[in-house]
Length: 54
Length: 244
Image (cartoon, rainbow over all chains, first blue to last red; front, top):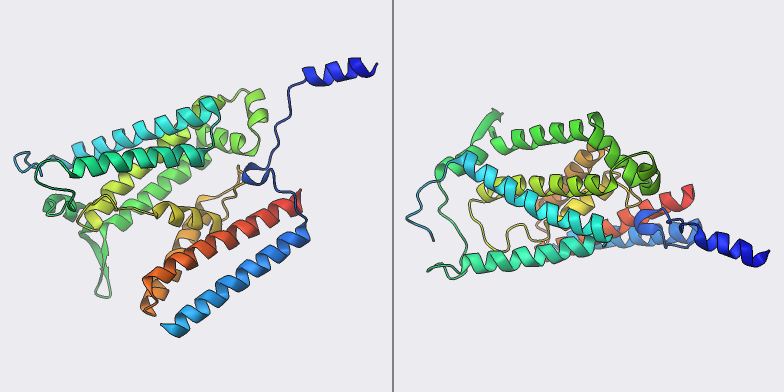
């Protein structure tokens, strides 16, 4: 029975993952939030110091 | 470089750049649609090939790789000439051309079968295929359309800066990516609006013009641009994860 199921599964076309560029991204929303916060802070700091030093 | 060539009619030049852009777009689209190669890799490869071809072209005759300048005034006036004035500030003609192209793209995206197919493939390629959409030709046509737009943009940009070198338009792709991502075009595919992209372009331009006014080091602008792309991608990814 198991062999038969395996045969059926292997005969099915592999379902293509959706998600475009992020289809292999496997992180939680919490980690993504931290990433966004860190990136935004870095951007603001760089702009602030660039304007300050110019 | 070709001093005995004479002045080529503008419509012929425009047709030539559109045809060359379409051809390059077709090559890109063919490799992406047929062999399922990643578009970044394919376009990066053709970019290098074109860059080499331009460098060789600029070495022809006595030019020795120098910047092409002294362009005919009929060409530069066609793009840079004054359209109208607002309080003494001249608005150049290329603003009108960009507005016309934006409206044209809005119609293609929202009012044509090709536009609907494009979004369908971006959202779910398999579902679009099952629904009877020709995935291959739609992808090829998307790249051809992009190539045509690159050709027209090059035509306008050449006249705008009144010279052309191998470095003209270098890193413009990063500006385009940043503006699109800020404007809500998702890397997930099948998401994006022309109005969003226009807002993204204006927002990015305002940031960089503002930083230029503040006399910020030009090298720092690259760092800021890179960070903007990274943050915009992070926000886009977060949106995708929260929906998943």
